[in-house]
Length: 177
Image (cartoon, rainbow, N blue to C red; front, side, top):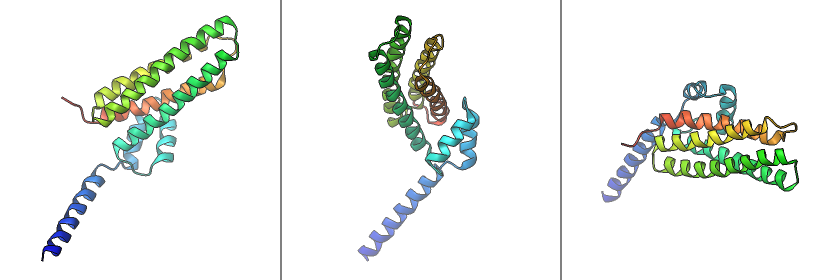
C-alpha cells in the first residue's frame, strides 16, 4: 500500500511538472511573434530555428545571451589584436574606444545573466540595452575609418541583432516589483 502511494505521488508530481513545463514552451508562431519585434526578423528566425524547436522563454534568453557574450568576447580579442598589430593613430584611437565599449558590454552582459537567473526581466533589459549601445557606439567609431576590419563590423552587427532578440524576450519575462 505504501509503495503504491509513493508511485502515485511520483506519477502525480511528474505529470504536474510536465504540465507546467509544457505550458511554458514556445511555439513556432510565438517565435515568429518574438522575431517580428526585433531589429532584424530574418536574423532572429534563423537564430531561434537553429537553436531550438520549442524552448521555454528563459532557455531561449540564456541561449541568446550566451551567443551575444561569445561574439562580444571574440570581438574584444580581435580589437586588442588589431591594436597590438599596429595601426595608424586615428584607427588606433577608434579601436581603443571600441575596446572600452566592449569591455563595458561584456560586464553588462554578465550582469544580464545575473538578472535573468534571478527572474528580473527589467534588469536584464537594462543591461542588454547597455551592451547594444556599446556595439552601436563601436560601429559609429569605426565607420569613419578608411580601412575597417570586417570581423569587427560583422560581429558588432551580429551583437546588435542578438541584443534585439534578448530585449524582446526580456520584455516578455516577469517583472519584479
